[in-house]
Image (cartoon, rainbow, N blue to C red):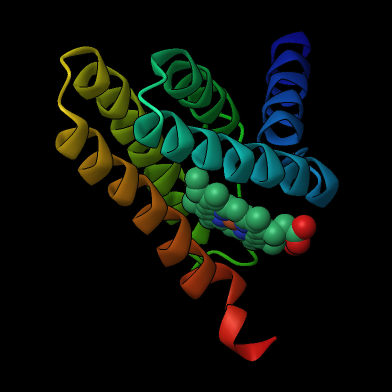
Length: 131
Ligand code: HEC
């Protein structure tokens, strides 16, 4: 009895942790990422590594928060969102290492890869075209 109650509480905590991400929080993270990307681009153009690094860190941090709650069992948007967020993290890190190695073209390629993740999620989940 005690054990099942504990299991229930753990599950409830997990669920609220997973999907306790409000729309407001998501929009805030989106703004952070948009600003971070702008700074990364500026940093590459101005040859300002610090600006690139700050942008990369901010992208990595905000992308870790992104979640989309599934609307039904068949809804795979939360799995999709998770992989998009992981890709943002990975490509953002590559922007940083490329910049450190003085490879601006590679940094820019990875910057574009980050942007592609943003746009594919917006196309799929947000469906910009319908708004
Ligand atoms: C997993 C899906 C997903 C990914 C990945 C994603 N977004 Fe979004 N984005 C959304 C959703 C959903 C909204 C709509 C906000 C809402 O209503 O929750 C949004 C909205 C936005 C907005 C508009 C916010 C507003 O004020 O209306 C901006 C800007 C934005 N995203 C930037 C980005 C950037 C930059 C990236 C990539 C670094 C990104 N997004 C990646 C799902 C995503």
